[in-house]
Length: 163
Length: 223
Image 1 (cartoon, chains in turn red, purple):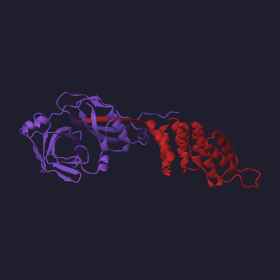
Image 2 (spheres, rainbow over the protein chains, first blue to last red):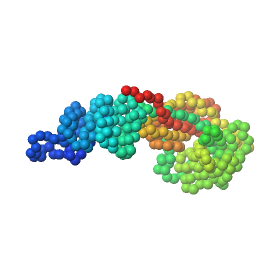
Image 3 (cartoon, chains in turn cyan, blue):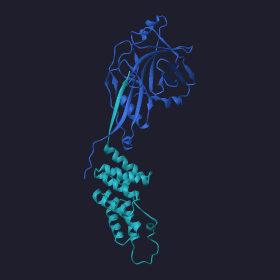
Image 4 (cartoon, each protein chain N blue to C red):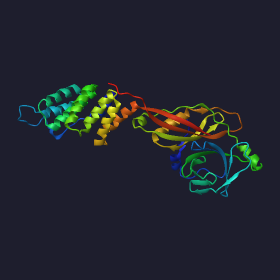
């Protein structure tokens, strides 16, 4: 339960207008384009069906998506693999996403979570700072920051009597 | 179960509850360089204020500047130290903060009967003794997980009475830097106690500071 909640907070999925198509509408195309697979992949990841989401997103990527969509899809693959605990794979996808779009706060946030999973807390903090600079109010950023703080901060209480 | 009150509760009560006139046995605390003091304060109904150290060798009262009361705000000054004392009369007892231009501290008092028939020095010595507070169990509060997540540090000062059994009675939060630290502080006080005493003192005031700190743990990046 706790892990799914963490994943739910850490996974930031990119969706855009191009992926919001109504799949039930009449469509005279005979071949599904990249958008449909990427949209379906994003939905699957959002619902926790990570393997399906990865598979559908990979199909979408193979069909030459637009530049921006490609960056978003790579970020989603990063999120899905991070949710599965596959931090190294996640980091690679997020890095590739950021090379296409360096202002993608979700990719920074997802990669931060992946670094957290590996115990690489300075790297996680660095990515989190980048995410926060781009999206100061993002809940995922605050949540990951909390996870890191629990690992890197040592609490103590000093008591003194006055009499 | 400890009955707790604090300034928020006092505000809810509204009207002043403490009559400052009389003799009080007090703990005055603050900057570490000043240490803690045990002092007697006497507030007259004519506005007079006098103080004496709460030690058996004390001989006479030292007059201070007159006290003032405006609704529930009670103040007086100590010209010797430059300290301005303030109290909220809506609390259950007399106590509050003192400040100078650069320092801040607190004070907490227990009302005592003052036998006016005794000579001044005898009267002081009769009420001065305060048994030392020797911790028998000093419970450490837990650090709230949410505070760690949010990297929150803080300070809480509580003042209370200790009865002859060593039990902490009527704790009040005097300073609270963040609400998140209230519950663990009070819970730790509930688990704490002092060594009992047999001297003829029913209770005495005391205060305890809790400083919540977060240090950077040693952590190496691992792959």
